[in-house]
Structures are given as structure tokens and as C-alpha cells.
Amino acid sequence: MSAVRGRGRAPVAALAGVPEVGVLAGEGLTLWRGTTCLFEELSFVVPPGSCMLIEGPNGAGKTSLLRIIASLTVPECGTITWRGRLFRDEVRAGQVRLAFSGHALALKPELSARANLAFFARLTGMSGQVGAVLERVGLGDCAHLEVRRLSAGQKRRAALARVLLSGAELWLLDEPQTNLDADGREAVAVAIRQHLGQGGTAVVAAHQVLDLAAAPQSRLMLGEA
Image 1 (cartoon, rainbow, N blue to C red):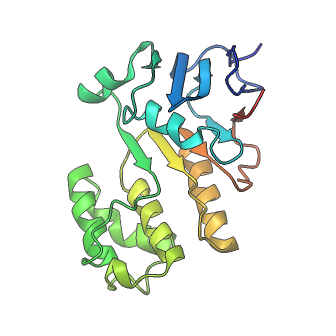
Image 2: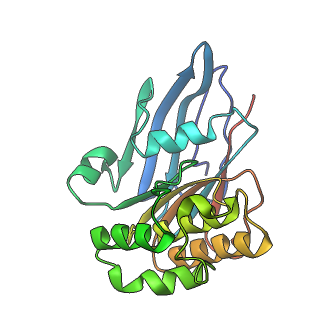
């Protein structure tokens, strides 16, 4: 049974292996960028404890779809729901905690990695885990450095640490492996697998191969019909 539906001249999507029962769902999503329709009447469902990988060529709408799910972009039509209720309303009501990691790091460059994460952890009630998370993502030895002095890969690791300290049940990750070496890419995959194993849900826009092993996952392919 397909968990994705779409029609028209827009790029098509294909998602396999997911039942029509989920915690996160999109229904009838249509989005235009200028005179280009990225997708039309696109629908999907994501079960709890699973990851939906959004794949496709550059410009297919991967980031745009993530932003729609996060309520940062408003589509021409369609809805996003969480457990059957409008997602944006559930977020505002505190019924779901969301972690969004995009191209921007959401970290202050003049503060150290540790200071950035300590501030964020105070907001999420996870202050006691900052040191352990820094070690987990491989930043223990450079946590004292200002973020602006970190390498591109280290900054991406710090962004992963921010997600780990969010305590969120839903992760939305846009190209989380960008600028990472093999160890960093594996750290991302391990973090996602553990998140799913704890009952969390993830949606990941992935240009590179993301090895989630046997973790519950599905693929949403955006591209030209």
C-alpha cells in the first residue's frame, strides 16, 4: 500500500514499505517556487519510531518539504498533522517537541561550543548532559573554542549536539552529513538509529547515503515525472 500520493505535472514521489498509519502525516501538499511546481497533492505518513528519508536531485524540493513540515514555509494547499491534529497547533500547545537542523547552525559564533550548548540545554532541561553529548559527537577536546573558530565539520557536529540536547520526539534534519568525515557520518547515523529505537521519529533530507541499518525507514523520492 503506497503511503504517498501525488498527481499532475509536478515531480512525483515514491515511498515504499510504510503502512497508512502514522504519527506524522502530510495530505494534499502543493508547493510552487515562482513558475515551477515542486510537488502537487503530495501525501505521506510516517509511523512513530521510524525515519522518512527525502531524496532527489538539487532543486527537487527536499528542503522546502522539510520547512513545510516545520511550519516555516506555507504551501499553496495541504496540511501537516501530528497524531491526527494540525501539526502547528500541536507545537504551539506543547504537545510535540520539534528539533529542526537546517543549513544554518542556530549557534552564536562568538560563543564557545560548550556555552552555546549549555544555554540551549537549560531551555530543554538537559543541562546535566552537555559534557556527555560533546564527547559523544567528538567535540570534547575543542568545546572551549568559539564556534567561529571550528572547522566546517566540527560546526556540523555541534549542530548535531544541539539536536541531541533538544529532547525532541521529532527530528527534522536537512543534509546532516554535510562536511562530515566518515566518523562524523557514522555518528549521525548512530544518533538517528538510537533516536528511533527510543520511539522517536525523524524526517531527513539526504543527498548522501545514510546507513540506518535495520532501523524502520522509508524513502520519499522527489523528482521529475
